[in-house]
Image (cartoon, protein in one colour):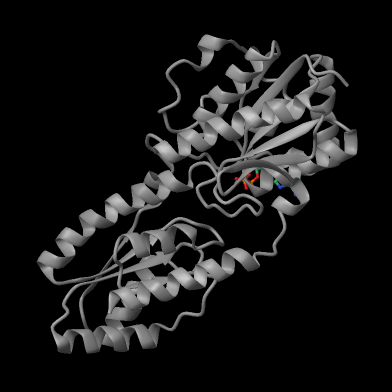
Length: 326
Ligand code: ADP
């Protein structure tokens, strides 16, 4: 099927760099003489035909802006076959020949079903701060989120070392400890609690007590949100060690802000490649990065739970955090 007109949406959790990806899709589609339609509010906007026409100037000055100009949403109806059928009917009614979805794992599960149930061309662009999508080294937004959290941790360290305190810092990351591990290593944290490795609070408290005896007075412990709340961990440490322990949850600040150079470049490359993929007749795949190379990955592999390679890297980084903290 020849492609003349494409639609573009952002779905699921927003991530810094999504706007840069939107810009890349729109500008490269127009370069290839395609018409581009923006879908507002993710899959819900598809079902409701909440469409806007996108021109070259629609994406002016958004490369450095956080969030997504197309808005994002979660959509219960899209989990149902009937909802996806309505979405395809709207696409066909508007003479749209292909769809680009910028989002995370969940959005790609939906995109996969749309592609196979209706034989409709769909290409994904990985955008999530959690970097939990298989088949790509990085997802758009994760580098910015790590840098934002790191900046906050540097500030916390100033007060931690002045006041001689233990601080538990909770960072985002759902089932993954991607952000926690990177800010743990980059921020020089004393310990990291992440879902993918065993953790032992008793052992950590023993380390803290031993450290105090040696004269080490300040500690920063990073907790990934998938493990426990920072308040609970702090009160447990206080109960076991008897030392005053403070907690902070960084929360949604990690989703915002201007994307880093790395995320802008990644978004520009992956967005443009999504358009190329549709033009080549590809579907049911996402664009991804492997080393320096942009590539296409089946949605099925992208959403796979198997994470052997990343687990190995996670364990290596975790080990290094502990060695360097001593
Ligand atoms: P993310 O894409 O960031 O992982 P979600 O998991 O919330 O975010 O998914 C975003 C949206 O994608 C959901 O609200 C839903 O509309 C759609 N979606 C997610 N999982 C599925 C699924 N298994 N089948 C169909 N649609 C899905």
